[in-house]
Length: 245
Ligand code: NDP
Image 1 (cartoon, helix red, strand yellow):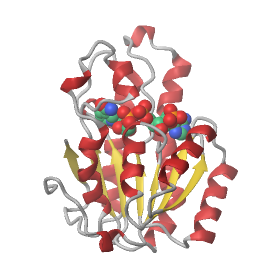
Image 2 (image 1 turned 180 degrees about the horizontal axis):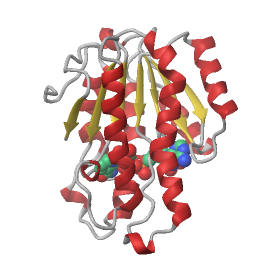
Image 3 (image 1 turned 45 degrees about the vertical axis):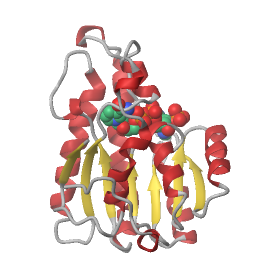
Image 4 (image 1 turned 90 degrees about the horizontal axis):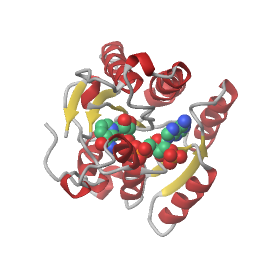
């Protein structure tokens, strides 16, 4: 179980090297800003140079060492991933935490109307690129300290829901991938977990539920303590644990 309102002692987070995808908006941005208060090394990934520069600026007054890196999962090629690996190897030698957070919703549509190209894009960004990034970074995680891989899932990754199409299928895939990886890594020091943040007030949520009263759902800041626990060396739940907030 995740301790309520977990707030890791600063010294435990000090020096931890943490990579977050989708760090330029929503939950990923809120998490990045929160972590910038700890003296850790943050590697923030996003697809927009402007938004990456903006978050780097927002973090500038804080204590973390922040590196931003542009990687658009829709279009990234092998050499783009290699650049990321080279950067991490040269600056940090290893990483301790990998947070898979970036995702797109696609469209909410019945299967018979779902655009085939969009379906492929959603699966590619949400699932295939998660596999590629994990594969690329596993060697650097294996030499990290108290290393962890956090996958972001969704309620529709456990129970299919009409019209959620490729997004739901991608999250089922994430759940399966996390199970496979946690079994493969059961004798290693890497902790694999899956977190479903639940209804949270972000652009993605607004796209899915445009008429919703936002005052009735959580803000990104409300889910962060759970993420902090999964990223801290104190995270002690069994490998392959799933959490729903
Ligand atoms: P947002 O749409 O607010 O943020 C998504 C982030 O992913 C943004 O930083 C976005 O970049 C980035 N991203 C999107 N496409 C790409 C791409 N091609 N390459 C690189 N980065 C990309 O979503 P949330 O914060 O709501 O979602 C965060 C995670 O939580 C997701 O995995 C989502 O599925 C999950 N989730 C969210 C829920 C909610 O209610 N909000 C509920 C359940 C799960 P940019 O800033 O450029 O747009």
